[in-house]
Length: 212
Image (cartoon, helix red, strand yellow):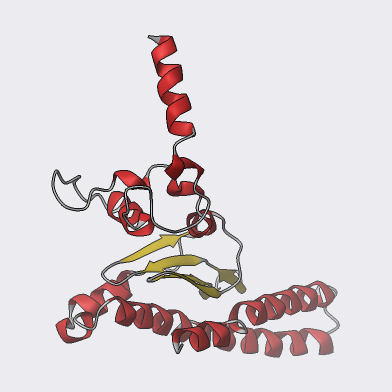
C-alpha cells in the first residue's frame, strides 16, 4: 500500500498542472484561476460541465502566492480576465492614538469576487450590506463591487488624517511644556505618516490601471 501511495504522489507531483508556474489554461483546457475560485468558494464538483479538478497544483501560481503573502503595497495586476488587487485600509485607534494598517487582497473576475483579509480590521460588512441593499448597484457586476471596496477603504483614510492632525496639535503642546517624551512621540508620528504615504500614493496607479 505504501508503494502505491508513493507512485500516486510522484505522479501528482509531476503532472503538467502541478508543474505549471503561471495563470493559464490547464491541460484539461479549463481556466485555472476560475476553477480555483470555485473550489475555494465551496462550489460542488459537477459531473457535467466545468469541473474544478484543475485547481490542483495551481496554488503555486503567482497570483495565488501573492494572495497568501502579506505586507505588500497597493497594486493591480491582470491575469487574463481576472484582476488581482492589493489594498491597504487604515484605521485610527483613539485609545492608543496610533494608526492601524490592514491589508486586503481581491480577485475580481467576470462573474466573481474573492477577498482575502490579512488583518481583522476593518471588517467588510458595510460593503456587503451596501450591495445587498442596492440591487441596481449589485447588478453592475464584480467591477462595481471593486468600486465599493475602494470607496470604503478610501473613505476610511479621512478619520486617520483627522487623528494625525490632532496628534500634531498635542505634540505642539508637549514641545512648549518641555515634555521629555515628546521626541519619541514625534518619531512615532513620523513613522505613521511615512507608512500612510506608502499606502495612499500607489492608489493612483491602481485607479489608472482600471481605466485601461
